[in-house]
Image (cartoon, rainbow, N blue to C red; front, side, top):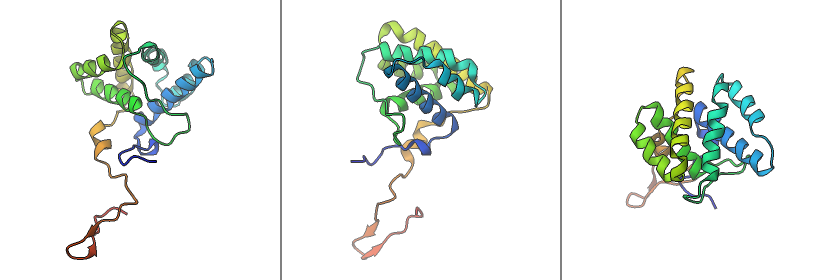
Length: 168
C-alpha cells in the first residue's frame, strides 16, 4: 500500500534523479556480484561528471560496509525513492549549500565511525563536481512540500461542496 508522502523518482530534479539512478545501479551490480564502475561511468558521463565515479563508488562502499542502521534502497525499477536514497540526496544538497556541519551530522547517522571521513570526502567531491558542472541538487524541503496526492477529494462538509485547490 502506498504511503501518503512517498516521493516518486520521476518527480526528482536532474541531479537528484541521476544520483538515485547511480545508487540503484551500484546496489544492483553489487548484489549480482558485478563491477558497478562501467555502469556508473555510463550514467555520469552522459552528464559530464565522470570524475565522480570513484568518489561515488567510495561513498556507496562506505554505506554498504556500515551497520549503523537498516538501509532502504529500492529496486532498480521501483518508482518510489527510498529513505536512505533521500538521506544521501540531503547530504549532497547540504554540501552544495556549504553547510558541512549539518552534512556531517547526517553522515554520522548514516555510516559507522570508521567510514565518516571517507563518506564526508566522497560526498563533498561529488557535490563540488556537480556544482562545477552547474548541476544542482534540490532542497529536500521542496520534496516534502509537494502535493503528491492526486486521489484526494477535498470536501467542505459544512457547506456541502467540493473544494477546488488548484491541483488537478
